Length: 438
Ligand code: XUL
Ligand code: CO
Image (cartoon, rainbow, N blue to C red):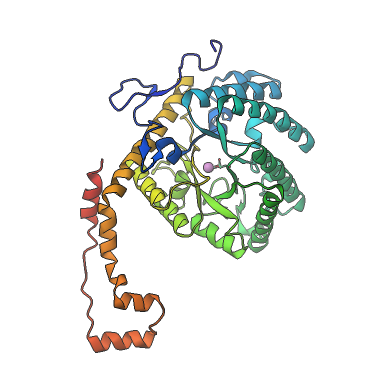
């Protein structure tokens, strides 16, 4: 492929931590066995289409900075075809087992929905060929229900039912396509399902509309026999001032209220977690403990900025804690680690896309290997077990099993003269213990 976009780059290989080669993996050793499973099968890495190939490097103050040949082609179908070729060249050279896309990233929107559908059919036929040729699989598909002006007041939560129906038509099409491509999940992110002001918003009505929409999607999933997982992606704000899918706890309560908690799991994004005032690990742990953990949108935010900067992850300690939480929860089933991450707009060279993903994959691999050590030696776990040990005793069991009333507990405390002794939470000891793994 001498005329290829990434012609200066060969297939990225694992060379080990000593390597000085910036275009090699130092930790992502895909076949290495970790707790009985290959490293790559733990991480299930995906490259996203939108930031990597569709975004031109623009921001609210400036135009695109990336010089990509497909941005210069005036025929949008031809541009999509070139973009597809380059995307698969990238997945292949990087060695990412999965990719993810929105309908409008992969094929251009037409003048009518019919035209948009036929554009998709044409490009998806080629994507199928590329997937077969390379063995790269689809982690999830999704619909863009937020860019077109018709969605400015939301899709499912729009005051106009015609917009709801249009969004439903878009989701039906891309869910069918995701099924056809053997996608392992389908994602719904409520891009503009929220509000700017309650002066013009009936929040209760909008929640019912969203519940209806998600029910229709679940029904369609079963009708077509799609076996993948439906995922909702929480985010507290941006683009709207208040998004309804605020965080995992909010989404879980919503799902229960509309009897959808068995139909949907969550796709947790690291940057969205911190925007909602939680740590990334908190969101993952909350989802696991409630049985709705699905997948990860892997990136990082900037603690000084209040918006979604979508940077590539580089904090090994954070990833190790998250990986340990995921491993203890049983690991991914259909989910994986999708890099919903983008270059900085000054990183204009094709190589920068590789540096970003190589660094991200190495960070995940390193975090996984550290999590393996944490879990295998069990030192952190032992402190937690010891801290709650009282609940295994007679009193603890009596309380938990519901066998003691409030009055009986009161009598017990008074009769036995119970005066609890405070015990240290040992946070600094534990932080020092944690530091030893790095
Ligand atoms: C936006 C975001 C989306 C979803 C898919 O913040 O994360 O790209 O992941 O629509
Ligand atoms: Co995301």
